[in-house]
Length: 425
Image (cartoon, rainbow, N blue to C red; front, top):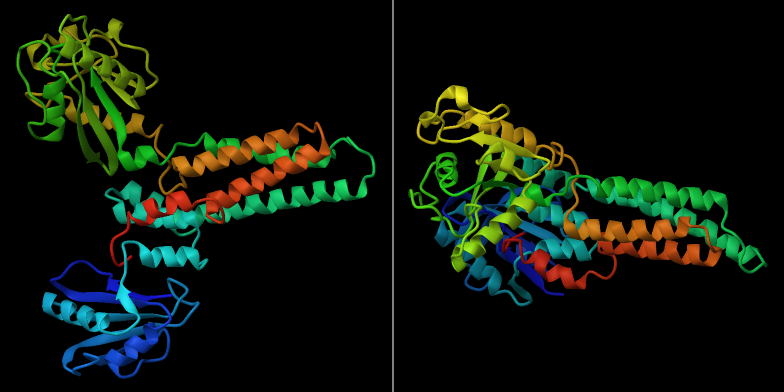
């Protein structure tokens, strides 16, 4: 196996840059540059020299780790250098001059940690999410996953399925009658675990946290939708005119409000139209209303489409008599900013219904799909029709958990996942 190296900290210039080396020749490479290495997991200052010319490159803090007690479960050396571009380039060039060393590919350090059993696939997904986190809620959710929260839970499920499988296989081995019924203890255990998995599947998913809660602004033409999205976003994101039907396609504006990721979506005015282009926009707007996590309705309250999280807005409130505000509607003005703070507060309250709890474990689509497979298999096992069929269903449940953690059948997702990582991660 090749020994890999890369800059693991931010791009220079910086006060300090960290260069990581991992693989069978990592310690040898460290010795070629530093002359000698301190004891594993101990740091020491060393003078770094080019392995061929012996030119002094830098004075750095050298920190070695021995397999398997390292981030990749391989021998690792970290070089904490001065963070100038020339210094970093010189050290990377010196490492490249050593036989058997090559620059790492994006995500290769984490992929090796996964392949060497240091982390499972759910923890790798958590690390990827942690790197991409832009809000506090995203950071907490990703950290819970990266620290092994879901892995530990899956292990508990796997232990229970394995115990149920052993009970079923033992019953098959020792029962001489064909078509024997399933032990009630197996049926009860499968049903209980299936119910628990269903509760996990009913939890809010991580996609709303990563992509933003979809807040769709809808209503008839000239209701003030584009003006509202510009006011909230603090800039001219949407074209505003007094011509009905100006907005013909939806506009998405990502932003964070009090640490909650939102995706504001401006839509075409909902009305009957003979204009083919506008009609396409109206159809898309109707679809977005159905898919909205939170709906901001700027039309007549009686005409609001049914939605579980709808906020009715009395727009252009600066132009109307306050007595005319319909009951249950929030007066808002994009000109005076009246009601904007109250609106955002109400949106945040509604968003909580589709977001995971603060720091709670949340499933992504891949994880939920495999848990759903396991849940289906456990329900089949709990049906108790036939002992052999129940045992086979339990084997399917174990296989689903193996795909969930990356032990089997995940080759198609690995390249896409680790390609999300930076070069030195």
